[in-house]
Structure formats: C-alpha cells, structure tokens
Length: 104
Image (cartoon, rainbow, N blue to C red; front, side, top):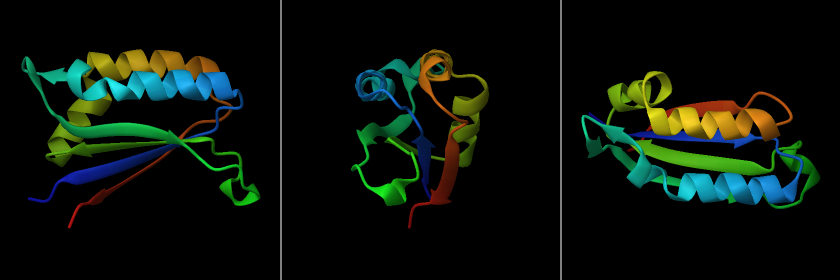
C-alpha cells in the first residue's frame, strides 16, 4: 500500500501568522500520536513566494502518512491536528485547499 502525501494550501494574510503556523507544523511529527506512538512520517510547512499566480495562498503544509487510515485518524481524532486547526481558524482568510495523493 503506498504512502499518502497531503498538501494543504492556506491564505494567511499576515506574515507573522505564517511564521507561527510554520512553527506549529515543525513539531507535528513529535506532537501527533496514535496509540501512544508517532504516526506522521513527515510534516513541514513553507511560505510561498510572492507571485501573483499564487492567488493569495501564502503557506503550503505537506504531511506524509503511512496509509489513508492514518490520514483519516489525523482528520478525525488527532489532538495535535485539533490544536493546529484552532490556531489556523483564527488567522486564515478563506477555507484551506487540501489535496492528497499516493506516493509512488
């Protein structure tokens, strides 16, 4: 079964808030636990370049999961994800765009 790569694109207008979100994502692999164990393979967030083609998107978060079931756990049960969502709901301009795909 292939790993799952997930990209989440955010519109965060304030650069200071972009940096705060990056900091939160930097500890996600340690903070997110499933059955008491770390389960996220990779997590990182990066600001986008200032370019008109970005259409207001200022932050891209990338997470890699061992399986779709792990991603579903992240979406529905992970307390670390709840904490990130609390932060982001206060600072985003529009709902995020989320894409996921199999890693080949």
